[in-house]
Image (cartoon, rainbow, N blue to C red; front, side):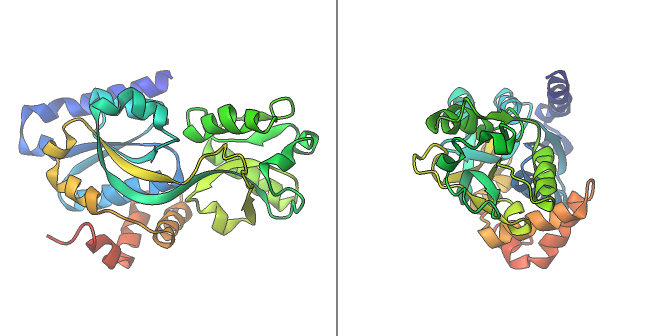
Length: 288
């Protein structure tokens, strides 16, 4: 929490000059992002595109709660991965009056509980009941502040009566994926929290468990969300965001390009993807 507050303080310091009104300060934008692959991907894509248009782009990784709080306080300008109407509903209810919804760029997002395909006799969340010992009593999750974590812990686990057998282990998306890969390589049982869109479905033999009780919710939309006054302060970017759309294939290829590039190479990977997909880019960010 101290680290998160320090990060927000640094971002706030970076924002402080924008109100002074110089052209350079007005071209600075602070984007908050969470460690979800689609957010890392589109944040780096917009960083590249905006820097080509003369903006100075600062990006800060935070958990979802501090990201929404930073937007509401004006310490952040933009967040590109708001899951609505369910996953980030609590944050939207708390802060929505001080935010601007800048548009939907993907509309088939889902929260899931998944297992490897080789677990042929487990096909529904209901099938996990009575099998806790096989999974060491663990559902391997992601960061504790994620909406996926909250939905799994507060909805799915009690709805299916799993609370006496399983504990949701929270850590990070990176740690979850490492555990998933290790278990698959060793052909061991594992159950994880996951979501669409995600490149893991293309890389690993996975299946989403059926959710007959609807505990994980239905398909959601991914929204671009700005601080109050964003549209007025950044009309060019707002127009880009309102036109921005990616389908499953485009988003998967962008995620894969960035994920394969390695730490620190995300902007360059986003640039390569943009150069290889000019029709997609021109649909929302045509050359000036």
